[in-house]
Length: 111
Length: 120
Image (tube, rainbow over the protein chains, first blue to last red):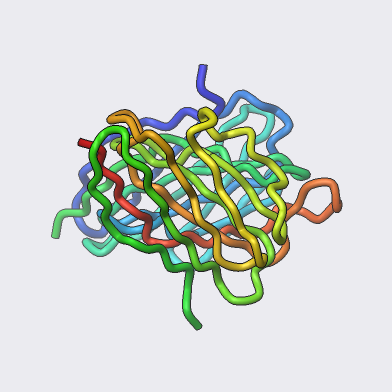
């Protein structure tokens, strides 16, 4: 079993839709949770990071962590065609530096 | 300011050859990481440097892979006797502090564009 599970999609939504992306994990020691966006043939770009449980909002993006369920989510409101990319969740131990990534979810926002 | 840069952007080599991949981290970042990303997969950790020393090399798949960071800035990932299974995008990331036994919390990692390695 992989440490981080993520549905690879692909996910296709109309412009303006609310998008929900999710990851589950098995290691209860993970404390630091990130979402990266990766455009084709580019490096991952940090979108959101959260420490421990709770919600964090930044513009159209909301990151949610539920440690009791070992489940994290990224919500994108008013999705735009420019949001079309692969979204990677990542997490790490508080004293570690290795990031554990999901496989990524491919998102297409149709104009 | 300038982000993480990696050269070359693409490298095609033949099975059995030796390759070097270079990473230039963000200026002032003390921590540097190498990851490998296969098609349709997320990045997989290879090695982490804090300054000049490799603080964690547990992700290196075998002894054909080696990385150095002699002056605490630029790093080179070296692959000997390349195999077709080594074909992937090799990503480098840097962060300001890094964590580990120092007790700092994990710091944000900023990624470069990657080097696409193809072994024929």
